[in-house]
Length: 331
Image (cartoon, rainbow, N blue to C red; front, side, top):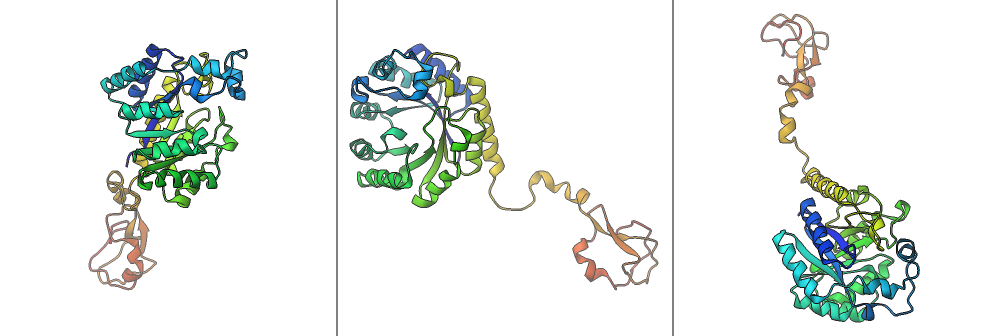
């Protein structure tokens, strides 16, 4: 099954519909399966007095509150309709993460078949119940969570009506950018084993090697932020891939998918032709006359490999030569 790659545009559109469309273009050209935005109402998401995260303070106007920052990054319902239509013309799936109940309803009414739950909502019981009740595909991010909190969230989603088979759990570390030593990719495998669910990885590191490694370790979903330009103003640009990096990541993931193969160990079609060249056969180590007994003194093992397999050495030793042989001639 192909890895589902989510190109996370998030709020990197900076509130501009035109910029959002350019991000869709990039995700489509890169070959991502989906491009994901964020759906929220500032007055439903954050209080007027809420502080920004440290990384947000470093990448946005320090005088601006989190509420003010969030408010200017909203996409209204009309924008959602337009972006969904635009995604269809580019043959890429539109996704968005809801951050409040009104946004959950909006996305459901817009026909979303996959609901992405962000790490910050994993302890939000009413939110989880709301999404779980739709019985649709769910992708659950688990940044900042331990196994107990993941188990609770899964129990709520399942009890609300969503079958476990429709849930994919993403390992994540909620820091932007995430330090390499905090990635802990093995936790993704721990999640898959502990809960018997499909597992994936939502990446916030710089660069593309960690999501590629996650695919090699069995990730079924990869999510990665991207932007037009990392130097743009906004909370998430700095920790996002630029277009050429997104293209490189998708290409590498698709190559890793092919390289993982079936797990069946047998000669591949491309290497079969090299067997006779690289392997060896039993050959005469000197001239042998018909009727002579074959022994370690008159036979040896050399390339090419299109004669008697050297694994039959003990079977050949002690037999009688049925013809004359020249040195290096296949027995």
